[in-house]
Amino acid sequence: TWYGPVSLIQSGRIREWVDASGQIRGIEHYPGCGYAASTHYVFDMNEPVRYVLFRDVLAKDMRRSPG
Image 1: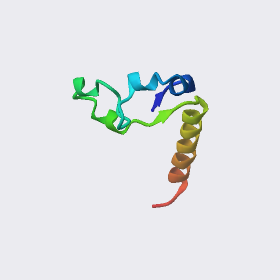
Image 2: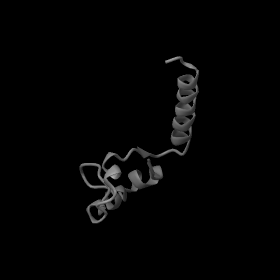
Image 3: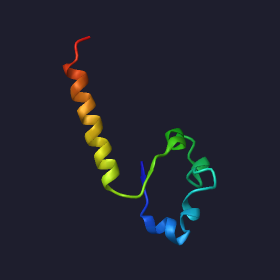
Image 4: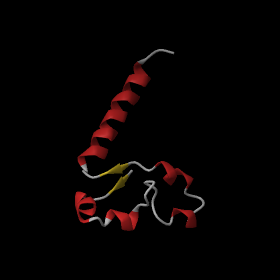
């Protein structure tokens, strides 16, 4: 997950960080960061918090489920 303030979009400065395909610029210089190819962008800090809470609920359900 990559957080960027909405102002990056509004100002057009997002183009400094991300290419037209949505990939982080310069990532090719870090071959060990293949996971960054599937970066999830968020523009509100509440979104990653909600996702963590969501994953916690699923993890609890998995521990309770037999099998």
